Image (cartoon, rainbow, N blue to C red; front, top):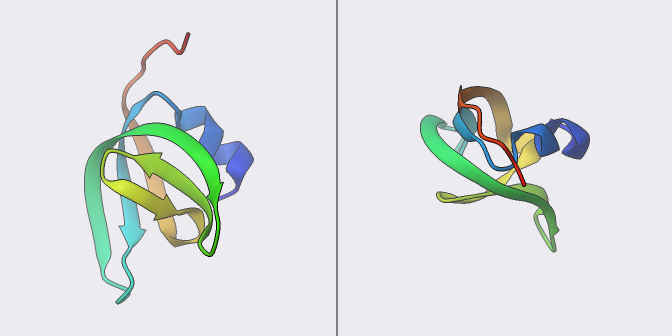
Length: 69
């Protein structure tokens, strides 16, 4: 996933599927707060689950569309 693609999910509730460090696929519901570059990790989704590296994201789908001020 690219940063430009990830920015559309900022402020939204999503279901995200990503791999952890061991390669296990995880699916969680979370709120995306920001997309940012984290040193030593690279571009990440900043969520209530923590930072999720964009290169580990497999799928993102919207649960609830919210207006971003």
